[in-house]
Every structure is written in C-alpha cells, then in structure tokens.
Amino acid sequence: MKLTTNDESLDDELQELYIRSSHWGLDIGFEEGELRFLKKMLHVFAIPNLHKDDALKMEAFGNRLVEQQTVIDTLKTRLTGLLKTIGPLIGRKDPKIGLGFLEQLATLENEIKQLAEEVKDIKTTLFALVETIIKAHSAKTGDLIDVL
Image (cartoon, rainbow, N blue to C red; front, side):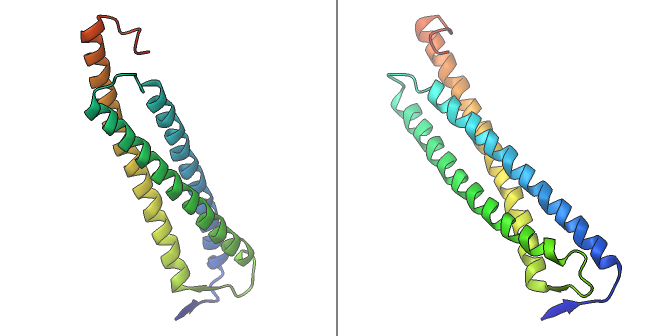
C-alpha cells in the first residue's frame, strides 16, 4: 500500500525527516565513541591475577562491546541507505512514500534508542565492576596507584 499526496508541505516534511535522520548518525557516532572508551577501560583494568569471577565478567563485557559494535555498523549502513532514499525525494513534484518506508524509519529510530540503552547499561555495570576491582585491589595492596 502506498501513501501518496500532492500536499505542498510534504517537501518540508521530507527535509525535516532528512535532517532528523542525519542527527541519528550523530547519536550512533556518540555511542560508538562510548564503546571505544569502554574498550580502553577494559584494557586498563585487565589486572593480572584478577579474581576468576571478575575476569569472566570483564570478558563478558568485552563480548557485549563487540556485539554492540556490530549493531552500530549495521545501523550506520541502514541509516546511509535511508538517507540516500530520502534525499532524492526532496524537491520532487510528486514524491511517493510507502508505509513500509515509514515503518523502516520508525524501526531504525527505535533500534538507535535501544543501542543507547544497551551502551548505558554496559557502562553502568562496568563502572560498578571496576569500582569493586579497585576497592579489592586497594585492600590487598594498600595502593590504588598499582591499578591505574
């Protein structure tokens, strides 16, 4: 089923949609930066002789970060495709927009929000684990500097 209209405001709506979608790229880029930071953090706190449970948790975080990077790569590709679809429609006299296309936009927006929530969850739980590791290491050695 296709949604078609001769409404003159459709061009403005398409421009707004293009701009909004472009901003999603910034959101994805922000989350990608967060992942880079968290990966560095994992490497900094890869302390030799780390308690086995903590080492397994750190490894699990590493796996989650790899999974989220795959999600980011997929979202970036899909977003690029959608922007390439929207761009040529702007300024056309009779652009045709299907409901399927609008559903793709809504789905992509939701997946970007899910990505942000997942990265936030990883960050929160990783920070808590690192705090625990620092406290345990400091209690053993009496020196926080050894960890950092």
